[in-house]
Image 1: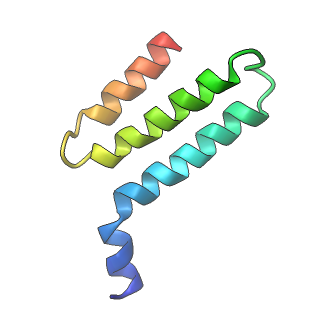
Image 2: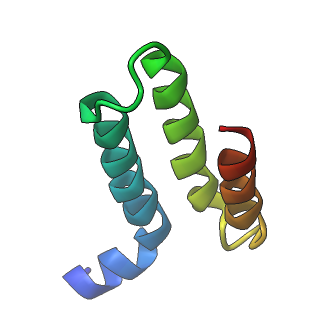
Image 3: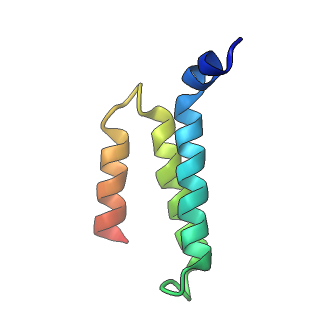
Length: 72
């Protein structure tokens, strides 16, 4: 299996992983969220995991983004 084929086969997981790492690091190292960091990390993981289902349920990442923006 070539690198390109491997990336194409696991693109959703790569995108979700990168977004998850970025979002969790923002929650942990940002000075804006001081009291509910655990809840922020949970939201970050749920938001990033929504991208794992983006091919099966294409609107799920959009709905997750709206939920994070409106609720959080």
